[in-house]
Image (cartoon, rainbow, N blue to C red; front, side, top):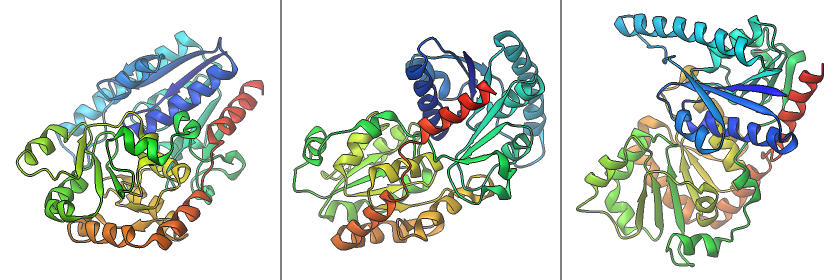
Length: 364
């Protein structure tokens, strides 16, 4: 069996793709899997590190304004479409899976044109333009939210949830062990701050703005700055870093960080939300305003409406983030209630269900 998996750009696309590939390999050790990503993006590093082959396309993100960047985008898109057709022809997969990200569009389009069965894994509550167009020709669309028949043919939709990292499902680390691994006292309250694998400018700036409040807080803070901002944040806190704060570029074992913390501050990417549901931690969501169709706010509201998360908007983050954090840390009853509510939304078998659907397509 040969499967091609395309997408990436952020951890929110890469980790689900790796979860699907891992489940395929678990069931079929001889399965030949080829990843297709975007040249220069983080999948070109993360996928080989996980033991899979990857080929890069020169595709770029579409600029928001006309100009030279738009011309460059179109040239790279044409190059990517030609290369994608060549890859599909040479690899000749039994199935193509698209998980979102720059490379997913050209690759899935090439596969569908060549008559290869295709599965789309739509992670967000609001489908992007590319997936909406591809969904008309794809064989199956695996979604994480209800009501997605607004975007896709209802007969093709399967509600599966989003894949999460296997380590998160297998974790058996206690809170005590997790805090020990971070060198944090057992009786301390812990706040985990993350803007995703690349980082979030507004969250990082809000932490800098509130550094004195953090210093005075009766809690420890584990701060994942993301790769884009790590050196800058280190430099800006060199003289005044609180003793109750740890600064990390990237947390390779996020499951241990979840186990250690009492409250999470996070962006509202679909993959992150799926992980938070599994981790069952009270969360303050700060949706990124810099995403298509404001889909992170829609993701966040699906939890807020069920009293499973607190929303802080990006434009009020400096004033509200630490205030909401302090309120949550001081309200044990609310934390327990939010944990129970978010856990009820978890879909721990998402990866298995997606692979089941993939096999149905291959078997006809």
